[in-house]
Amino acid sequence: MKKINIGDIELNVRQDGQGPPLLFVHGFPLDHTMWNQQIDEFSKDYNVIAPDLRGFGANALGSDTVSMAKLADDLATMLNELQVTRPVVFCGLSMGGYVGWQFWDRHSDRLDKLILCDTRAAADSTETAEARRETATQVLSKGAGELIESMLPRLFAKTTETKAPALIHATRRVMESTEVRTIAATLLAMAERPNYEPRLAEISVSTLLVCGEHDLITPAKEMEQIAAAIPGAQFVEIVGAGHMAPLEQPVAVNRAIREFLERQV
Ligand code: MLT
Image (cartoon, rainbow, N blue to C red):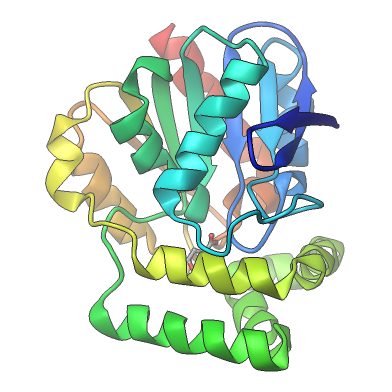
């Protein structure tokens, strides 16, 4: 892991391989290790960059408030510090996708292609945003145990639970090691994130959308609709996966990513 100074804090970043830059951005409340199987595959011929976002992994949170825009700006600063000048392929899962819309919006000169896994373009409904704010307060006073117990079963397909329990244990460990201050601040940031649905038709970079067939958090149907709204975008449903498709079905996800990258080159 490299430590990259981005101004107020340092980001821990895993960087492996040589070739065009391919940036992997994790979901909530996780870290870069969710991409281990993509890092192994794509570092053969890409410059793979997999950071932990502000507050996640071993990173400090810095200021008390964050936003999806700030997380995207952090990534642009990190790329400057890594001297990556070539536009990147941005691949984000769920919250990483929310950061992806911001990266497209704010740093389009740095973006070559977009890959969005198990995410949504819409903002939270009023009820969901309110529930996130309540959870943020609860997490600060009582810890993240309840959030983790309610979230974990919704992340994985039933078959993953039976065939690959080690993946779920590893994910639980990452969630449990994330600081409550980060969890609370990021819940508030997700509740405030803007709605990108009205902007989808403006996206002119090549875009791939990937979603687990059994995703309960960001359903495949909704991602198919996002794909239909982005000119020329492709949608791939990952059989046998839930919300954590890249972790649950890495072979199928890596194939979809590779076919997309090679078709578009
Ligand atoms: C994630 O996986 O990043 C979260 O489920 C996103 C969310 O809570 O909206």
